[in-house]
Length: 256
Image 1 (cartoon, one colour):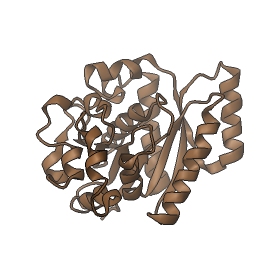
Image 2 (cartoon, rainbow, N blue to C red):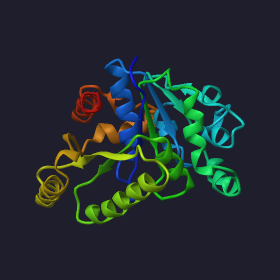
Image 3 (cartoon, helix red, strand yellow):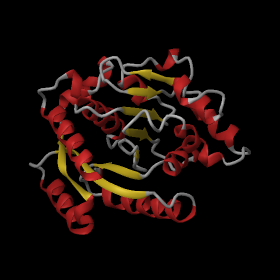
Image 4 (tube, one colour):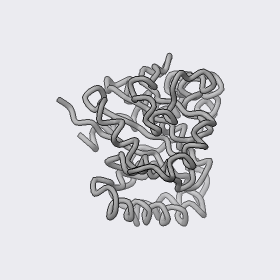
C-alpha cells in the first residue's frame, strides 16, 4: 500500500501562483495515476473554482470540516475535469479563524479530519492563504512537507526566509514531520536576466531543495481558471501544462 503524502503549497507572499500550482499539480498527479485530494484553505476559494467546483453551492466546505460539523468524506467533491477530489472553501472560511480561537487543539483540526481518509489517497495538496493564520497553521500541522512556489524576482528571497523560519518553528513545536520539500520556480522567463540571477542564487543557497522542473510564464495557465479547469486539462499541449505534468512526475520520484 502506498504511503499518503500531505503537502502544503505555501508562500507568505500573495500572487505567486500557489493556487495555480495546487490545481495543476493535483491534475498532473491524477493524470499519472495518483489518487489526489486538494484542500482549499483560502477563503477566496480560488482553488475550488479553478477545479471546476462552484464555491457558492458547496453542501459542506473545509469550514465545516475544521469546525467538526462535517467529515472530509461529507465535504469532498470531484473536480469534473481534473480527475481529483476537492474539499472546497468559500467566504465562510474567513469566520473560522474567530470561531476556532477558543477551541481545543484548534491547530490540529485538519490533521485529525484527514486521518479518516488516509487510505483513500496517495497525495493530499493543501492550498494555503498568503498570511500566516490559524488556517495556514492547520495546513502546516497536518502536512509532511511544504512546496513553495516562487517567482524569481528581487523580493522573493526576503519572503522566503520568513517562511523557512515559520516551517522551523512549526517543526520544533507542533509537527516534527514537517520539512521543506522544495522550491518551485514559477512564471519563469529565462530572457529576463534578473530572473536567471535569482534562480542561480536559489540553487546556490538551497541546492537539492530547488525542483528541477521550472514552470514557464504561460498565458494558457492564466486563462484556465476562468473556464473552471486546471491548465493541465484546459490546454494539455501548452508549455505550462507540460511543465506541470513533468513536475508531477518529479514529485512522485522525489517522495517515492
